[in-house]
Image (cartoon, rainbow, N blue to C red; front, side, top):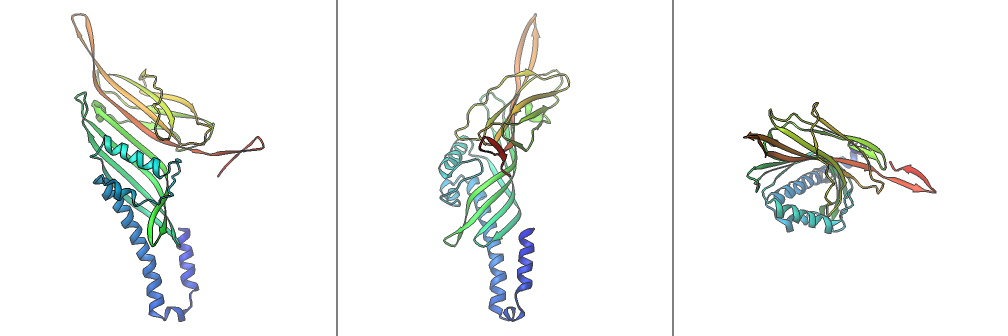
Length: 288
C-alpha cells in the first residue's frame, strides 16, 4: 500500500508537458506493468518447474547470493530441494500472488503457497501430505531479469497423515512469533475414533538443514483430547518447528490375550518464528 501511495504521488508530480509526450507516458506505465507481469511469470514458472521436478530450471530462478530468513544459502537450499524431490516426486505445488511492491530494481511479493501429495506407505496405510504457507519473496533484477534473492515464511502448517489419521480434525496451535529464549505453549487437540487408543507427542526443533530428529515422548491423549507442552524458544536466534506426532491403535481381545494393531499415524507441524535478540554490553535488546 505504501508503494502505491508513492506511485500516485510520483504520477501527480509529473508535469502535463511530460505526459504530452506519448513515449514518456506509455513507456513509464508499460514498464511498471511489464515488471509486474514478469514477476508473476517468474513465480509461476517456479511452480511449473517444481511440479515437473526440473531442478536446473527451478534453481535458475534464484540469485546466486540467495539467503533466506532461515539462514539457508543457495547451496543448502538446493540440497534441501533435491532431498525432498528424491523422497516425494509427486507433490503438486501451487502459488497465489497476493501483492507485489516494486521499488526500482527490487520487489517484495506476498504469496500463499500450497502443496499436496498422495503418499504410499510400507505399512499398508496410504497417506496424504498437505502444506500451506504465507510467505514473502524478495526479488531483484539481475542483468535485466528478476531473480529471488531471499524469502521469509510468515506462517506455515504441514500435515502428513496415514490410515485413519487422515480422517482426524487436528488442531496444533503455537505462537506464530516469539522472542528468543522465551517460554511458549504448544497445544494439540483432536478427537480419536470410537474404540481407538490415541497416543501423541509434541516436540520442537530449530529450522535448519540437515534437520535433526526431534526427541519424542509419547503420552496417552488425555480425556479432554488436549495435549499441551511448554517450550523455551532457542537462544540461537533460529526459527523453530513445533512437531506433533500421533498414533492410533485398536485393541483386539481374543481368549484373554490382547493384540494391539496400528490403524493410523501421522505428523502435524507448525512454524514458530523467533525474534532475534542482540546482546550488547550484557544487555539484551530486541531487534525489531
